[in-house]
Image 1 (cartoon, rainbow, N blue to C red):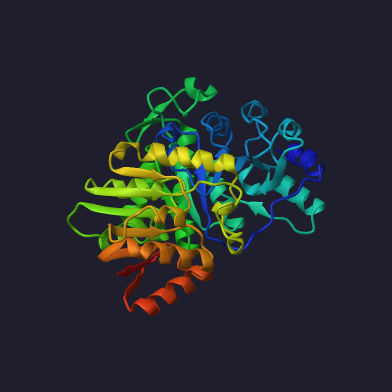
Image 2 (cartoon, helix red, strand yellow):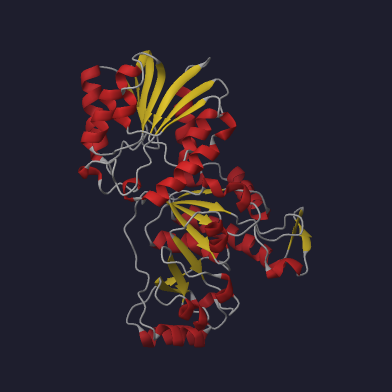
Length: 425
């Protein structure tokens, strides 16, 4: 590892630097078997790990990033070079990996020397080569190290997928892996291996440290496995830790505002990948208009909303998310209607007074949000629910548009913990 570091540092590659906190979700895609169950729920900034990159590419999803911190030369064969992926590669990795990724967008980082078994030599090397340097901790795997690296990059909300640390049948990963045939053992009612148990142990320690030192972090772990068992046990023992999943809090808060008895009919303006739509449609008496143009390259956004994450997606990415939204809600195909139109155009097609609720989460500029409110408010019946997301200082346009409407309408307004606004019309 130390020799790898010595060679790789001399490449002069850009290195990871700290970023200001922001509210974009980091979705960590480990390679565990349960990734097959939850990969459709990947959202925000999607980060692959080693072999999960090729697996996701084969599914048609191009992750934003791939992280590697394994020093073994075999990793070079596992990780494909892709022009649209940013690679975060530890300096301890084998030089052949850096050579394979030549021409790609690569950011090098250093892991904490204490975690490599050669602390003195690596610390001395870093001190010789740099006046100042950053080392990223986080346990024995890249799956765990993504949490710490993500924190350094300004992320505060983390969703973990495929971090199972246990077998499903005879498979250790969602894809064939050379380790499938290695010896295994039973632990905690799961078939696993000692290195998997080490990841669970490190995960438990990481949770304790994050809980103690970083109360503003939000974490949610998806899937089924030994590590997820540890996560559930931690949450039961610490119910207030990490605020819970903000998305689930938003869903619960919104559902509480809907009529207790149905049928209920409404519209979601700004569907993206359909995660919110799917949760709404899990109410069996709810019918939903899913309104989104899924236009790429900011075509459907005002000039004032150019910093919106969704407005900067390419058409290829938007096509993928539209397909994902359709697949996620296929179970309720008879109760949903896909409306692939811009918000104001779609509103012209809906009869006034015909909806029980409208949820607005599209253009976040003042002009865009105001126009959506004015277009969709008449579609609600008396007593209907007008709501939306991102009522926060990060989106002052949304706050201004909502505040002006509340002042004019003289209605009851509520704000939940996930910056969701509610108005009973």
